[in-house]
Length: 119
Image (tube, rainbow, N blue to C red; front, side, top):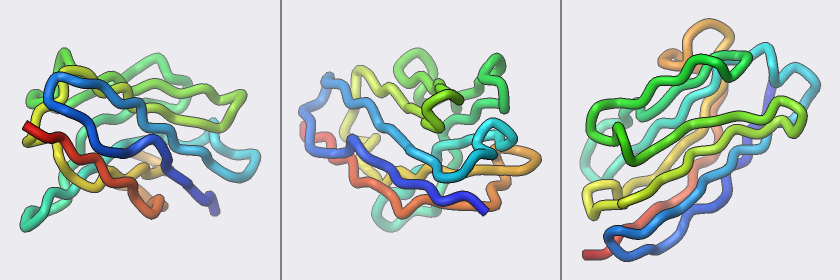
């Protein structure tokens, strides 16, 4: 079992940046692949980025490639999502997730943090 708490969301103008953090409880953080998902109003939740257990392999979806970066610090039990050049279409609730196998298929979810990008 792992508990996840996101922070760092907020309101930002288009072109701005935010860094989301997700702090995990427990001593097994490094055994989980981690992912970030988002859900915009009226849309389904979508996978945004994933990182493997050691942090050496990352993946982001095409719509955020070159703008978003996922990273993790296993010593701090924290995963990050650096978001640059934000666009209004990035507005969503962003969720952190932990997975035993694949970041795309999480076993545990955080409560979410709102990101709003104004035009």
